Image 1 (cartoon, rainbow, N blue to C red):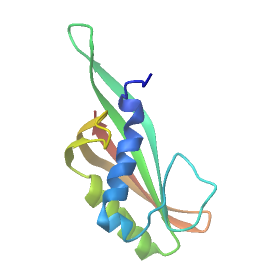
Image 2 (image 1 turned 90 degrees about the vertical axis):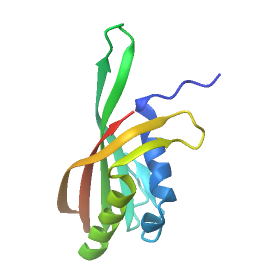
Image 3 (image 1 turned 45 degrees about the vertical axis):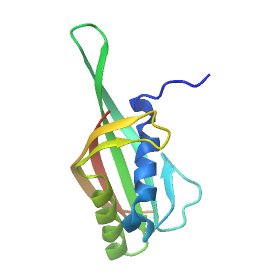
Image 4 (image 1 turned 30 degrees about the vertical axis):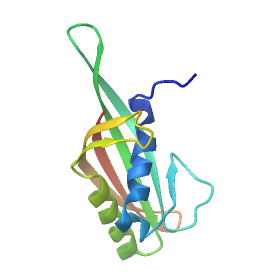
Length: 133
């Protein structure tokens, strides 16, 4: 028996969107949830870092807002920026997306913050999105 997907599974839809993006695919096809032992540059990690549920007056669950971190890694700073721009292009202001199996829907996705760093011999661009499910 299949379990109904909720905002806890939004990462799967985000991964679908990133892998379907021609701009992202031109730079990498390595998109991993949370962490990877296959750190072959360039690659993308994503993770859910927060979840807020809005209750309805009826007591039923309402819409969820998920904070999602998408982190780009590359050996070259300019390549890392290009990958981050491709990710932003694929996700920022995205509305009305549904998963390929039609079990999960993204109402909106908006970039709310970003940060850059150097980590483990790689340039890092971290993008933070608020995703409504």
